[in-house]
Structure formats: C-alpha cells, structure tokens
Amino acid sequence: MGRSSGKHSSEPDGSTEIRLARADGTNSLMTFDELNQEAQRTNLVVTCVAAHTTPPVYRLVDVAKQNADAYRRERERKAGMLEQRRTQTTKEVKLRAGTAENDANRARNQAASFLEQGYRVKVTVTQRRIDPPDSAKKMLERFTTLEHAKLMGEPRMEGASKHVCVLAPDKEAKQKKDAATTT
Image (cartoon, rainbow, N blue to C red; front, side):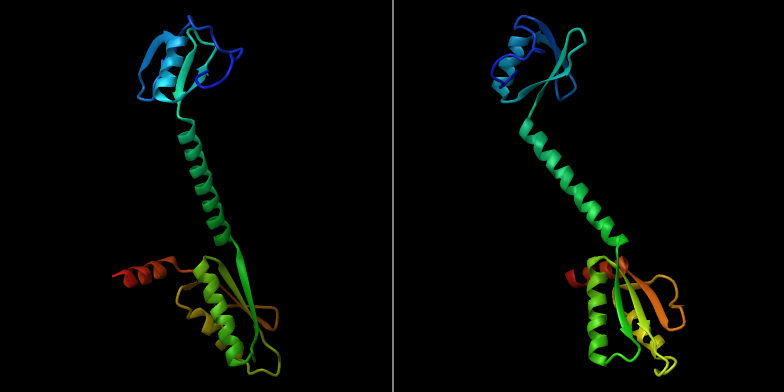
C-alpha cells in the first residue's frame, strides 16, 4: 500500500478501480495506482476500509496523528481511573483518646493531606476505661473541623470503645479557596 514495500494479497493490481473515502466525507473513484500516487504526494498511508465491497473502499490515514490521538485517549482514560480509585479508596488514621497534643496534630495534618489528595479518611479513636468519657468525642471533633473535609454521616461507636467518623474531600470548599487565591 502507500508506503509499504511489496504487494499484500489484499491489494488490487494498479489498474483496478477503487473508491477513496476522504476525511471530509467525499468519495471518489480512481485506480489503485492513482491512489498510491496521491498517498505519496500527501505523505499519508493507504488503509483498506471495506475490501469485500464492489469497488473496494480505501482511506488515506495520517498514522502519526492517529497514534498520538490513541495515546492521548489512553492517558486520559488512565487519569480518570486513578481519580476514580482515589475517591473510592479510604485511608485510615487511628488514635487513642489520650494521645498527646503534638501526635494528634500530626495525625490531623496527615488526614488533611489525604483529603487534599482526594482520598476519603476514616478516623478511629479508641477510648480506654481510664480516659475521660467525652475525650474520644472531643478528639473526633478536631478532625471534623478540617478545612477541606465534609463529614459523611455522624460520628458513631463501633463496639464499646471505638469512636469512628468518615471524612470525604469537600471539592466545593477547595474550589472556593483556589478561586480566592488566584484573584
């Protein structure tokens, strides 16, 4: 065909009449030799679209552009899959109710980082009997006030000693902050 060396078994001989389907939607009848000359002149590759029709239908294709478009579509598809995986993945931060202030701040910053990356965050605070009764709830409240977080349901108890809440990234708050920083 156009740039190929040698004849393929599906190629007609040079005098056979074929139909050329152009990119703009027009069709024209020509011989296979004329098609090859046009392919060389336009620096495109001849591709058979429908070999079993009468006359056979061919198209001139820019292979480099076609490959670049396929590569771009694949990259966009993978990026979409990554974003979907992030929104479905839940990271977990575990603490005790009596955790020191600086360690609690580190865990809070880690949760904020996960939320900014687009992950959901499950915060689990374990309360021991010797801890004050409301200390676990106070610890959870510190996480629910994160800047880019929205609470998915109310904080709940799991078992007798675990307080749990799930936070999701608040995209509206992030967009407002981004808009405020750009102006």
